[in-house]
Image (cartoon, rainbow, N blue to C red; front, side, top):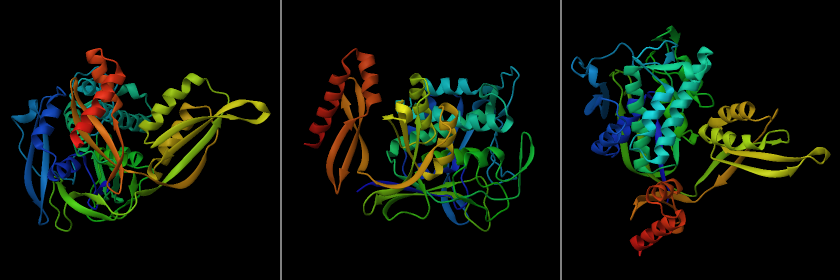
Amino acid sequence: MARVMYIECFSGAAGDMLLGALVDAGVPIEALRTALGSLGVDHVLSASRVVRSGIAATRIEVVAVSDAASHHPHVPDDAHEHPHPHAHTHGDEAHRSLSAIVHLIGHSGLSPAGKARAAALFRRLGEAEAAIHNVPIDTIHFHEVGAVDSIIDICGVVFAMDWLGIDDIVASPMNVGGGTVQIAHGTFPVPAPATVLLLKGVPIYSAGPQVELTTPTGALLVSDYARDYGPAPAMTIDRIGYGAGSRDFASVPNVVRVLIGERAGARTESVLKIECEIDDMNPQWFAPATDRLFDAGALDVFLTAVLMKKGRPGTLVTVLAPEARRHAIIDVLFRDTTTIGVRIESVTRETLDRRWVEVATSGGPVRIKIAERAGIVLNAVPEFEDCLRIADATGRPLKDVQAEAVASWRNRVS
């Protein structure tokens, strides 16, 4: 049976709340600290047990080392305090640029897939801010303390999701809260501009305390990982995690809850098939456009040679994506290709159950993706990026590294 995670956002979501829920569900805090320590961002990461409206939960707090001496826990005026990145064009050393943050991620100890995911998340956050302020993405800078919070929350969730190895993730509709929020640019209605842009295509509602319940980082992470939205899927629960926000409401627990277990029944899901034909584009553009489609949340992208009107050869671009990523995918197609229209069709797909195991090889660990049905293993494929890293480091042929990884897995299960 397939592993599935359900993220319940009945009290909104923030990056620290989601990270707290994943730690509460079993991600080892020391392993998390080790991974985040490799980023080279001086910080203190604390995890404590707190109570929110009678519910025990894990509270994650991140403090920049420069501020740790003067840090005193407090209850902020709003529900989920968070720093907002903002457009900044001065050479102020108290800010980190997007490229600087991506550089830190690239030199960290996160897995290759984790590095790519974290970098893509920050690019998406930067693109949202650039669109809001109508400035180039290269001019977007992050307040230094805010960058520490954002880097740790985002990279921490990426590590935790990688550690859990679950790619079947469903989320509830997002409670965004209400009222107004004070950000660097003034007072804005909830959800804040960056939050509402990151939640395009995601079902939202407003209930409970009239404060900000979903932050930009929370919106970014949930919308990126969730493949579907709605009620909890049919599942057998074996892990439960509660991640606490900073404030304790009287009327509703200020927590994010994650449920992890085995999905019951066949693994089916509704997805969108988005297509367009192109006959007037430089072929070199297809590869970067494909990369950006995956960054935008595509489940699959493939290109098919077709014969178009007047006998012109062309390319059919087909993208499979969750409904929540519809607008992001279409934006990429219009921005990064020459198409002037797309077709959208709702389809149902059924997939094998998938899970990850890690095996040892002479060059280091390699993750194996296991695909099975009714408990019978049908495919076991080494992660390409892991094998490529070892091949580059050792000078061995890539095919030999892959063969060793498969042999190691077979020895493990025999």
